Length: 216
Image (tube, rainbow, N blue to C red; front, side, top):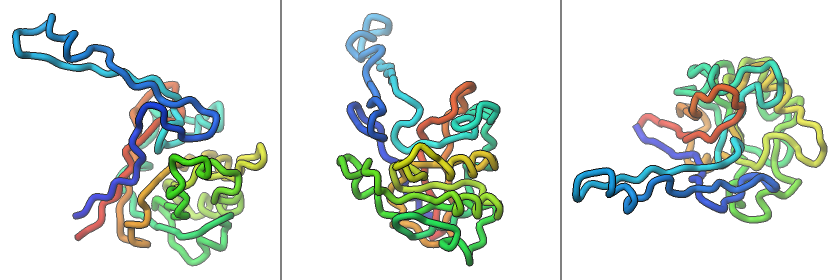
């Protein structure tokens, strides 16, 4: 079995989505300060991080869009772990026709647009980024996709205030994973996808370590 990391690493100062704050990562207890608490030659560090939930590669639960939707604490593992995977290539606006001949029931559908090549640049947040249309999201929801992910800055077109893809998918309890990377390494089918966030009650989005396994 081969493992493929599909996540962006978190680091101080990074920009995930234009306008959102960068994470603050620092020591809560440093190695030097810890020495006063332990025997000679023994030291530890405890870190802290302050960030918004939409940082790095992250997963959206229904509570991100709907007040009565479930949060991270209620996210079923079968919705985000060891999912059979369908990788769909595309650019621009991906509509229902991109999935017309695909069996997606119970699968993680990963949209491979190549936009991750712009990560860390101003271009990454450009309004013409690839996205899933409302019709495309409704198609995936109607056909029972378990999760939908994309390697772009947003699964929706951000040039308007509407968010039809988020709305259709999260209304159907289909988690959304955004800011994936490295999808070029995956086959169209045959991989298994995992993107598990921390189970935080009262929080709707959180970073994940997204990865895929492929039988070797």
